[in-house]
Image (cartoon, rainbow, N blue to C red; front, side, top):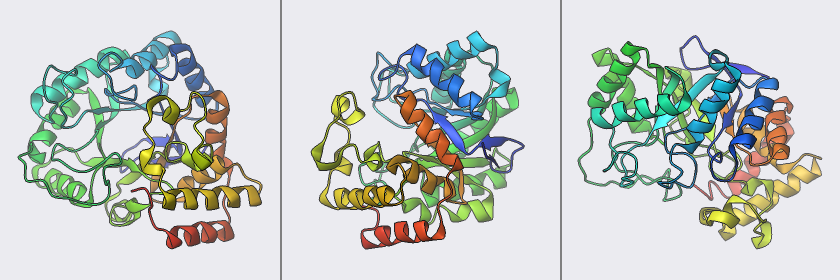
Length: 346
């Protein structure tokens, strides 16, 4: 396994991060434990979860993923060997979390961390992330990466950082990160933290893949100038870059077949780009999913690639991608496909 420094911390995280959001719906507790066992054996030391998970969000399954991780920690007594990241839900109307609108204020964050710690059966979180901003933004396929202004009040960033500081001071949280954030948001978090001596953001978890490279436009520079790297999620674009959904296919048991959540990838431009990537992977004798993950792994501003799998075969391919080095010729071709149709799925 390869390892990279998380921000300006003393933590070295594996290039491959184990994503967990399917555990509790598509995957059972036993399957989640099997995935964690295999990943650790392959050198993965970084797990990512959230109080929201499993996905898709439901009142009856909220927190199920953290619970599965917690039982694995208890069974193996190995919490200190894992760098654990989780998230607090941002502004939403999902009232099953705390009986009302979720916000990034003191009441919500303090309740969220206590719930996560209990489910995870631990007394600290290595990286605590804001799952999405309190201020309203388009995201999760709703035009993410394309800013549209909403004139609504929001919790002040300084207020949120003050709460996070109290969690760091108490020892419940070691470091903080953002998710689904914009250049303005990240720069404000850094500016306010530096001005007020509050915890500094160490990472941003945003979508990044061959169909959505919008992170390169404004966000990637923070890695070089501010030591804030990307934790890339959705490296396979919800599995579409594997090619399994081409020509309208809906494999039995797949996320799109079960939950109907892949519409943003089912456009003509996306289909054309996916076909080109899949054809090229076959031309160079590489599994399309491995090529897509290897591309994400190759970006110097990526701290860790958050992979996800519902089968052990998928998991092994995803983890093995850290061993694959794409050539300059390979990368040039991928850039050419991107240039012909930039970001068909932002």
